[in-house]
Image (cartoon, rainbow, N blue to C red; front, side):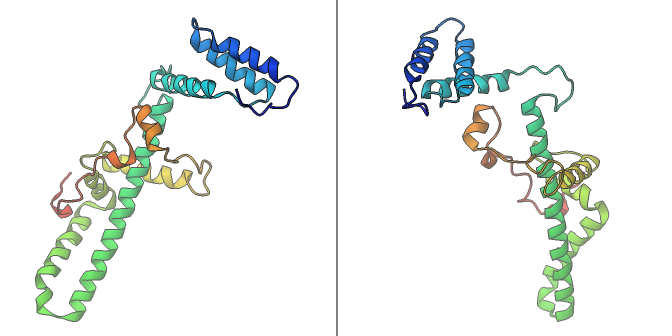
Length: 210
């Protein structure tokens, strides 16, 4: 076993204690926890078997967690999933605002040019403009999320957007929306970032209805 205690006169004691715990087959989970606690108390690096098995144990704990609270965001994984949905909704609102701003610029440019060749393009952008005017930014963002797990009504999208904006950046919990490694997420039963459902980006958005 290699550890940070190499050269320490107690190294043989550390090795003996950890080897003894590694030999335990019954109550294996308690042996793993005891080995990790021992390393923490003595200030030494845990051997690879402790790190590996402790990691597996934590993953199982997170996946099998039974929260005493009620609601969709009661457990640790459920709360993380809810936070990621909030981020998706925030992003959808920002995307709608970006598209709306672009459409308004394009309409102005085409009208200023007075070029008849751009008539069909003008009609296309006007459909978009009318869609935004009819439903509003948050309702449009809700429709944009169709097909995703983060799909919600306009009221929920508005709430998620405001909460995300308040909490992130210089807010009270700036790391709340940290995205973990894909391999770790898969072990927890969560989708990888690349596996998120794509919504309806490929549709003409102005054809979407609530």
